[in-house]
Length: 468
Image (cartoon, rainbow, N blue to C red):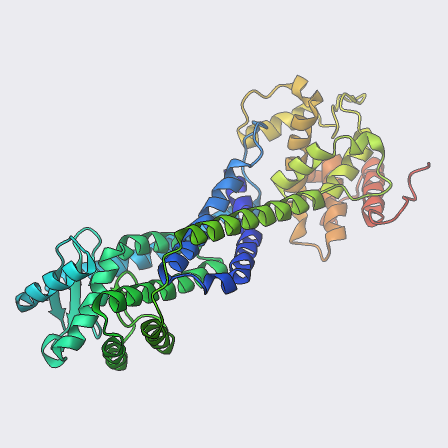
C-alpha cells in the first residue's frame, strides 16, 4: 500500500504543477467573473487536487498479489507524508482550540443584537449570529460554522462610528451567509493533506483573496455605502495583526486591491451573475488539467522501459513484468533485464542441472528463504516457472544484495558488481571476498565480470559479449 501511495504522491508533483499552469493560464478569464463565481472556480480547482491523488490510487496496477515489505524509497515517501500531515493537522487543531477559547472567554455585546438582526435581514441571512468582544483579537472576525459568532476587539464597538461599524459587521455576516467557515475547514483539510505542493498553497491564497472580494461585493450591493466601507476597512487595517487561520475577518486580503475593487464596483453597474460561465470555465480547467496530468503520467510510464538496444527479444518480451518488479523493489529495470539475460536468456521454464528455475534461475532453497523473509503465503516451487512470481522474488533478492554493499562502495558500478557476486555465489561468500578474507569462486568471478561488462555497455548500440 505504501508503494501505491508513494507513487500517487510523487505523481501529484507533476499533476499539481500542471493544475497550477492551467489556473494561471485561465486568469484573464477569471478576472472577468464576479468575485463569487471566481471563488467557486478556484475552490473547484483546489478540490480537484486531492481528486487527482485519489484517481492515481484507483488507477494503481493490481492483481499481482505478491505481498512483502515495500522498497525503502516508498517507505520514506509515505512515512514523510504521514508525518507532514500529522504536523499540519496539529497546527489546525491548535488553531481550533484557540478559536474555542475565544468563544468561551468573549464578553457578550447584547447592545448590538438588534443591529446584527437588522443587518442580517438586509443581507438575506436567516441564521442567528451572536457577537462578543475580546482583548485577544486585534481585528473583527467570525468564528464557528455550526454556531457562528462575531468577535470584535475590545472597545471597537464603542470607539468606531456606528455607520462604519455597520459595514464591518455586514462583512462578517457576509462570511456566514456564504458558508465561508465550513468551506475554509475543507480548504484547510486539502492544505493539510497536500502540504508539500506549493501550487496548493498558491491556490489557497487566491481563494482567500476571492473570498474577501466576494464578501465586499455583498456588503457594497446590500448597504450601498462603498466609500464609507472603504474608510472603515482602511482604519481596521491599521490595527490589524495576523488573523486566526480558521476564522474569517474583514481585514484579510490585499487592502489596496480590495479598496480599488470596492470603488470600481460602486462606479459601474452591477454585473449579472453568470454562473454558467463559471461552470464552463471550471469544467474546461478540470478537463484540461486532467488531460495534461494523464498525458504526463503516460509519458512517465513510457519512459520507464528496458532501454538497452542490444537486449534480445526473448528478454524484451517480458519487459512489462521486469519493469513492474523493478519498480516494486527499487531496482534499475536495465540491471534486472541484464540478470535475466545472463541467468536464463529469457526462458521462463529454464532449469539448471543444480535445480535453479525460471527467468532469474532461483534455487528452490533460496526461494524458500525469500518467501519466509517476506511472509509470503501460497509459496510453491512450481510457481518459480511463473515469470511474474519469479521476477518478483528475484528482484527482491537482488535489491537486498544492492543494499548490502551500496553504503560501502564508491560508485554504482561497484555496487552492481558485488550485488551480482552475491546473487550468484551467495551473500556470505561475496561479503568475505569484499572484506578481503577470501576469493570469489571462478564461476562467480566470471559472472561478476559478465554482469559488470553488460551494465557498463547498457547505453551502447552493441555489447561486446553478444554475437549477432
